Image (cartoon, rainbow, N blue to C red; front, side):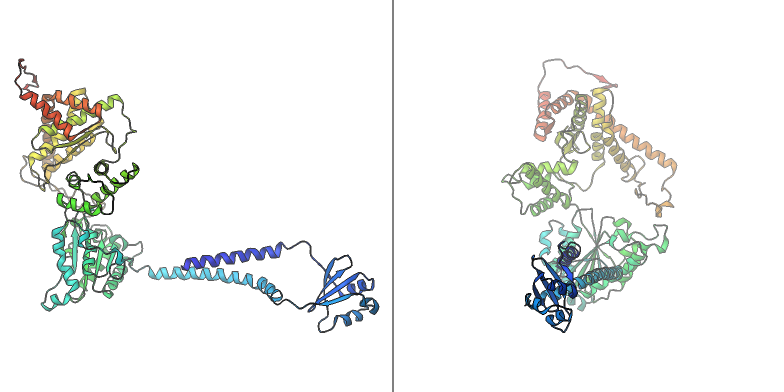
Length: 628
């Protein structure tokens, strides 16, 4: 509103300025003559003047030819006397008609005031604008150390109140946080019995699982103000600003107690101290020190709870995690099938859905998806339906959205040549056939050679049940499946292409983790892992590898052995089932996409024919010394 009024005033003053300029410089060229009394007397004596109009001290003279002129009479004297004094003949003066007209009140004073005051007003206006801007900059300089926390909740945005009903799943995390809610509602109950509620709660979990949403739900359940700030908002280029903002933030939260203070992405300021070359003078470390001091300064009766969230709990400074600070850790996991279905129901609220919607199937097809991923799936499904000019979101739209979120949009304009299409078809058929031939593998859901994202083709699998742990057999099966496309290209075409680069990268990484992290090799139950991330000029610059060069050679040998065995396993399956490989690939070339039901029919039909007795004599074929 203030900006609107300011703009209106500016426009009005601008138009006044323009009008004054026009009035001053673009006046009518036909100006009336200014005469002296001597000239008037001379014209009267020559009988050239017909009429004289008197208005105050101003005279308007009208000549016989109707031309007009102006003059000024003497002050405090009559016109007739003045003209006679200047030599006007009395007889000829009587022939001139003299009229008297009162002065106009507005026209006599508004014009001079306007043209006199307007420049002054414009100067004052611009001076006031510059002064206000300078004052605002000075205020910003003083507010530079203020924390820019966003306020939600009781005194902030009541319409955006979030409770546990808006958070699907995370049952264990909700149970852990109920004590915090009860303390914010009834602090005396705990203080009277001598209990000490944790000052800080740390939410740990992968990105997108709902850490921020859960923190807001705690404030909504307790009906207290919710102050939210990101860890990166503390640190600025000026020394000491981060610490000043921490002090201001904690003071603000204390004034609004009972309240909840939420710090998102705590790892931005809470990294292990001493991990940089700046030592104790590093601005980030000064900010972290101030957070530690403020959390120690909380009295037992202070009804302020600090909740922080991060997905990098392994790099936090130990001082943050000791009792008295963030001494309660709440772990948030990726949602399971039931939780994914509940999350989908929440995100589908308010969207027109068709009667064939089956959110259970969508939940089964999205293992490993976070809450944010599922929200994106529902949104992409609605966008896809709108693009097709539909009025409702159908099941097919959501299934299409899953693949778009996983792999990217379809690129049907990316047309492959016949040779590339054939290579891609055999590559994907190799993945699918190896996976379907191994008992530990997950069932195939879809095979496609339609380009999506950076992939020319893809094979999707759907787990029968979700698993938290994996065995060595399952890892070896995954290795063989990853190498299935590579082996299929070499068997069919006698050469390999760059299409297997991503598969080889994933297989090499998995094999190295099997050896180094999981102890599933001949090197025994020893972990050779460590921090994979190298901190630039950080703590790990001085750390040495935890194994010798001899052990490193053994690790490389074990990794190569695992990949070689997986390659031989995949080769054996594909050579044995070469006819099926051909059939799957030809079907892909023809249809471009094979769904689960059609793929199962292809595999089962082959098994049924193999189970029937054959009248022909079967021949055995030797490949690399083995009977296949």
